[in-house]
Image 1 (cartoon, rainbow, N blue to C red):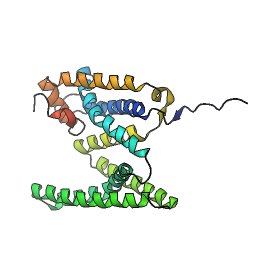
Image 2: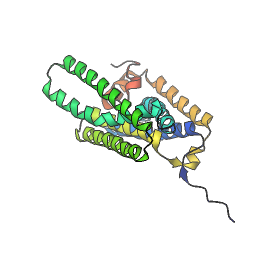
Image 3: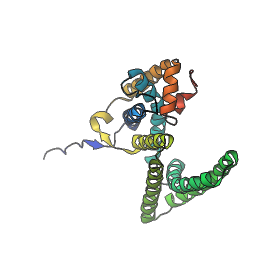
Image 4: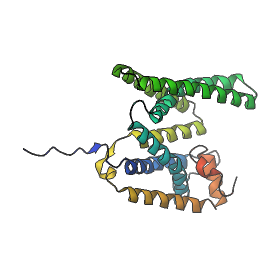
Length: 242
């Protein structure tokens, strides 16, 4: 009797290495999108290696840690707090996106609008996480499946609304959020998933080190901030050119 054929795609026994590898690949896509964006009167950074590396390092500083947390939470029991927080965040994303749009058009006082949104967001997120905990600890499998579909639909609709807004910051946020989700949830080829954790960690640290060295270039920092206001947030406070 022949041995079962090994699957090309699947969960890796080393989930940390998988999340780091996926995070590095997906953060590169985020950086490529940001580098290819050309502001009015500006030029593309896609053909400039130093600019691409800087954007890639900054994006990976967000995508890899979030991807690690999402992958860890997805492997835990249904009633765990991490998993409930992940599902609650997804469930609350659509109502908060709709409320934020209405609040922005109806409120002309930005500090008041920001404070209002922060309070509502905390309440909605808390209720969503509590509901996720309740559903996760119930003994009804059909309810858990229905809740997972609802959470996925809410997150997908919120991302679609942000993409349709056609604003650079929102588009940057959408690509970053998709990369974080992909780093934590996507299955990748076993050849990539089998990479040692130490190797993927060294590659990530090397990328971050190169990015940090490039933060001393003021003109490059200014260009990166204008192209990636969200995905470059981890590095935007460093260096000059602000």
